[in-house]
Length: 315
Length: 315
Image (cartoon, rainbow over all chains, first blue to last red; front, side, top):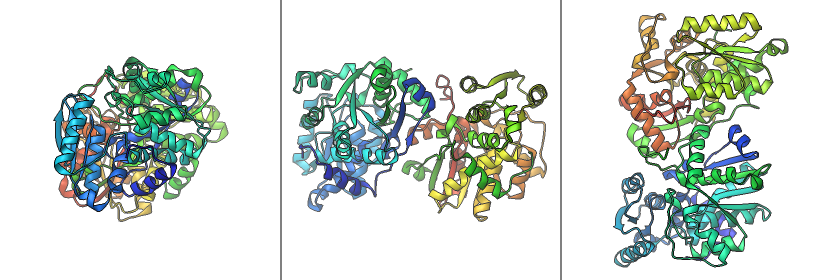
């Protein structure tokens, strides 16, 4: 399931997840509009079940399985939000979930995975260790791997937020989303250009995890990669099928610093009254850093999640 | 304008404020439902313009004025959210706003009032000082007083959130709201019983500002009153017309401690991913403190506002 989904897959995913996922609200702030010099609509995936967009992809994957596959369960490796989402999604179908979690993951996210009833398997915080542990669980249980981002079912699920957003705000001309592994970015890209090929699309990466920017410059996916950013959701090398979608659709990916992200995160908390995690704030940081690209525009941005440790805020 | 509004006034207010106010979303949490033992729907007035329900009443009052009265402006006294709301509401009609602010008000709220373009008048933190300063501004400018709660236009505006809530969630059998001056409480009571006289209504007060509980027990409004609570939005003696509405409709008002409120506030931040101020968290504190009254119920609660000092969180 590592090929990119088609637009029809996204439409089917929207119908498949409808009984389980929240149609998240959008919010708006005159103060932020004035700072950006344009109109900005925020799609609140921090208000999605589990507190992140990840539930969309996970529940689409879980309900795409045959009954035979489903009863053997699902497995994934995730620094947090996808693991939690898959645990919650598995519960909607009453099937087992196994989550491989690297050491150093945010405690609140690991607690949520356990609370959702999944089995947690710890590993070293490297891509190789994650994948080896997931393969081992797969071999012993027969569970289906639901990769956090290099999976067509996951990408299709994440993309479902775009038709929701454009249905409420058909006048948007630009969309921004963070780029980690690229499940959200690729899903949103395919959904957006499936609806309107003229939409301007921007990805955002922390300077300390700018592998997609560098890969697009190089024309091929760079690796290896040692992330250095507080955006714990974006420390991932972009997936191969994900990168291909972003390149084929000429998505512009821009960099922001962690300091810009922290300032933007604080602005979102105080002006939108929303709890968002650092990864989510990268999009507002980009709007403020590159005014020449966004002033006068009608911009939709994805607030990806709101799972933070309230005892360790970055200001 | 100190009499209570009629149900028609609330319907008219809904139409009057529609061009300016946000139809706020509702959110829900399986985790909180499990803790309460019932179904709880949260009406997110922290996502209202200005970050509090107060904008509803203020903008209804501003647009209820004749052109002659409007051009002389509006004045009020407020510890914060109503002052900010009136400043923003006045701006929608292009008229002057004067806000009397007691010393000790939350800095973020005073900054917001100034940013909205109002003139701020400082006074001592007592009801008498507030009212004297407001009367003085009224006398010198000809501005119309828009009282924070003892005003039929304000009560009617606040009540407009109830039809919005019940339209989306018609199965609710119980509503909870905090009680400060009682503008929200009276407006919601009149709206709720105007729609369904069988709805169970509960007000919530901090133990350190339980004047309405004591007034209902005594059968008449008690005073004077020295509030001692961190819920800065609820340090007000209930207004005379507001008290009468709550008494006539047999609203149950219950007490919660500040410690319970802080725990509930943290739960709202982590589970709903919403920034809410302490006053807003009293309603969840009440649901958790009085399970015999709320278990098995379908409860709607008002999250009143989200204006907090992010550098002085109470945990």
